[in-house]
Length: 285
Image (tube, rainbow, N blue to C red; front, side, top):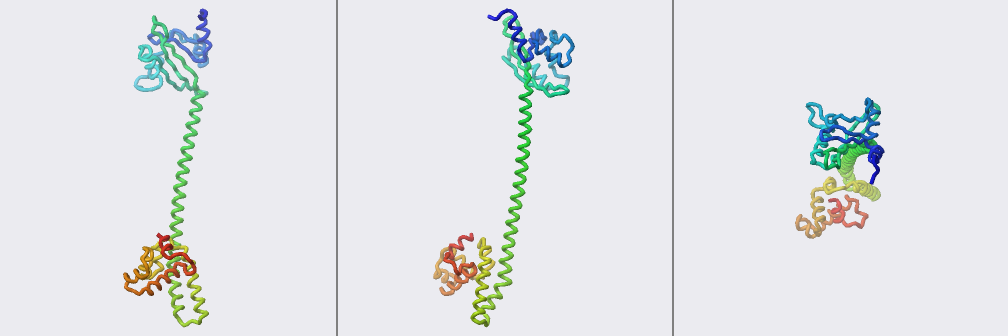
C-alpha cells in the first residue's frame, strides 16, 4: 500500500501537466508541472487554475465549427458521459519565441462515487519537429524527382530529335550518291575506257556502295538505291524464292534474275562478303 500523500508526490514528479476535472469540467486539482507551465507563460498567482472551467476554455469561438480546441472539449464530454474510455489528441501551443506541440489525454477518474476525469498534457515538440523535418525532406525529394523526370523527358526529346536528324542525314547521303554520283559512274563503265580506267571506275563504284551500305536501316531506305525490277527481285529473294521461281513470276530468264542478284549484292556492298543475300535483306526489316 502507498503511504498517505504518496500519490501527490508521484503526480507532482510527472513531467506531464496534470489536471483533474469534475463532471462540469471545473478544475479541482493540478500538479506541479501544470502550475510551473502556467507561471512560465505569464499566469498570475495562484497558478494552480483550481476553480476554472477547463471545458469553457476549450470551447470554440462563435461561428467556428471545427478545430483542435473543439475536439478536446467534445472528447472530455464523451469521457465524462462514459462514451469513451480514453480520448487522445495533439495541438500546437506556440509562444512568441518558440514552436511547441502538446499531446492531450483524457481518461476517467477511477472512483465509483465521482464522475471526474484526468487531463494530461505532454510536450511532444521534439517528435513534431522531427516530423516537420521529414515532411520538408519528402517535399525536397519529391521536387528533385519531378525535376529529374522533367530532365529525362527533355533528354528523350533531344535523343529522338538527334536520331531523326541522323536518319535525315543518312537519307540525304543515299539520295545524293544515288542521283548525283552512281549514274555517271555507270555511264563511265559503259563508255570507251582502257582496262585500267575501267578497273579504277569499278573500284570507285564498289567503294562508294561500301560507304553507303552501313546507312541502310530498312527496305524503304534500300528502295531509294534500286531500280523497280531490282526492288521486285529483292522482295522475292527476301521471301525465300529461288531464282527459277522468281524468273517464272517476273517473266524473265534465270540468268536475268542472277544478274539482278549480282547488282543487288554490289549495291549492298556484299561483293566481297560471304554473307547470304536473303539474310541481309531480312536484317533490314
